[in-house]
Length: 543
Image (cartoon, rainbow, N blue to C red; front, side, top):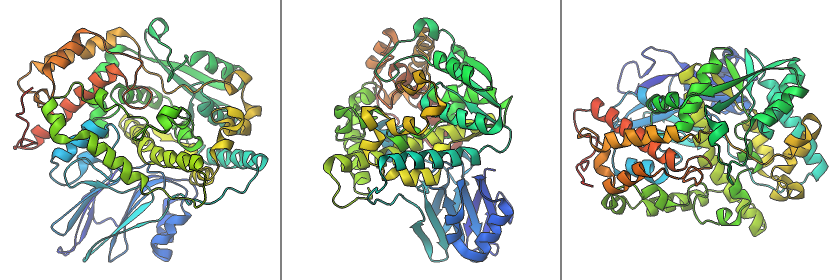
């Protein structure tokens, strides 16, 4: 369960967790042992016992003298902290962090220059940090000590292709089957990733409840594009013909999607993937009425190099984050003075170069393979974190536990060193994954191009966003309005923005920029209400 705590060595009782004297707290799931065995393991073997855990978790452990904060290898579960005047506060949610949350110009650089991604370790709020994936922080009377208990190790891949195919089949099957306990269902999109998870689970369990998602009106308004080439339903139906699945199609209305934007922001604690978050919040709530746990195909593209930026030269060699390379699309609606003052281009580029400097290198690797390793590192440390945060926070808010077998530690460790030529076997994106499970999927699905999480293309949704943004621009109480370029916003509210050219990832295009700004305004209003002082010294900038 979620937890928060305070550790202050100047107090007679140094540690409190959730207001009490608990010495151990866990958010997440451990698949290979129960919590009692895990606590005993830490007590006997110390912090190195974390190496024995298979699962996703954020842990706070008091060993009698020191506090240890631990985050899982993939970063699937969040853990934030703030150190001030010798006192450490920590929480698995930003809203429960027991300290005053304030923002500064770096907060705005994160929101406008990188968002909905965040710099690794950034909590966006001033002074707030997040443990990195695979990191342990130990708090002692002398301060913080940090070390990494897991990160991918670069080494030559020595298995031939048939052996690699068999290893992928074995490791991923183990990961899926290990996560089948509880009232479990599968989110079946009709893509290769969720279909593999569904097929393995159905074969193991004998039958399986499944769900797929879409939006009202998409039959009429769907616009195929390079990032989302086709609809999901025909491929879902092929899976239904092959496996004993109890399937349900879930549909979200445009009004529901629009009205859930604030709730999605509150669930994450920050502006997020706008309606991409809101839709998952809605669908998770519907699934939670029927099942407690959902298996997903999340993280497959990060592990098997399935995104367009692993293949398309202009993205692979963009010289910046390939999912967010067009800063002009981000800044077009912002006050030019704000953009100049924050130096968003320079901030994003510095973050990119800092991340590249941290890549675990392999001596003697070819330039092409080295670049693929770089982009894999960036994708797993940045883009995957955004999606895992989305999945966790929306699921928790809706009462649904989501599991991602593709993020299994053994799977990630093995695939880290598999070269691009194998992953892209025979010139097919994720050809290795397709070959590993070729006998489980219909040929149409095996040959399907990547298609991401569905989004709405209905103009009625865009109209709702435009109306709300116009209201915001004329609201003297809006903290965001002064930070925007009024004329550009008014123009965007007259002419529908493009639904097919993304400014972040594969899904966030023009309408999602409007929705993102609505979330930012909601976020700033929350900060203003929580603090008697203005959240920024310069919110009075004119536009």
